[in-house]
Image (cartoon, rainbow, N blue to C red; front, side, top):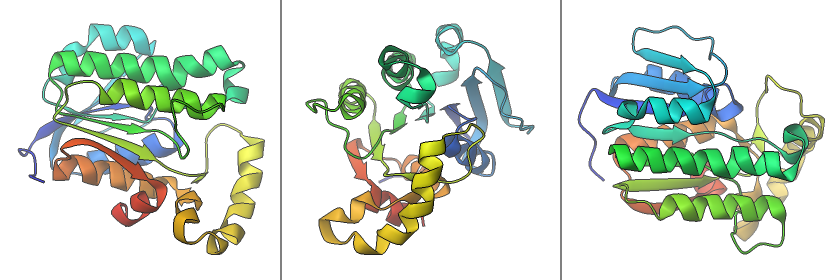
Length: 225
C-alpha cells in the first residue's frame, strides 16, 4: 500500500462517539492531515488549528458541505443501539441511512477512502435485524467507486461512553473474563478497546487501503497496536 500525499484532508462523522472521539484525537495529532472536518449534531468539545467543525443535522451538513470530501479520507463512526434509538426504524436511520448517504456524497465529491465502523456478525442475509442492517450498510458502501473501502467489524467495544448504556456496561465488566476463553476462530469475538479500533482506522487510511477490505475484530486488534 502506498502512503497518501502529505497534508491531506480527513472528514469524520461520529466524533462524539466512543470510537469517533479517539479517532478525532489521532487525526488531529497526525501530520498527514492538514485539515480535519467534523460533521455532527453536537460539537466535539475540541479546539485545534486544523479542525473545521460543522454542527447541525447530519443530512443537511452532508448536502451543504460536499466540497469537504474532495480527495479526503472519510471516517464514519456513526452508530447507536435499538434501545437508544427508540425503534428499529430510528436505529436503521443512524446505522444505515446516514452512513450510506455519507458514502454516496463522498464518492460523488471525489473522496479517496471510506472507512466504516461496522460490527462483528454483520451480514446482509442475517435473520437478526441488527446484523442484517450492518451487513446492508457494508454492501451499499462497498458498491461505491472509492480507491479504497475498509469495513471494520469490532466485537464488543470497551471504553467509557458519554451516554449511558447499562446493558453494554454490564457486558464490559464480564468481557475481560471471557476473552482468554475465546481462541482460534472465536478470537474475533473478544471485546476490543475503542482506542484500538480508532488506531486501526487511521492506520488503514494513512497506509492507503486499496479495494474493499473486511477487517474482523482480531485483525483490528493487530492493526491498532
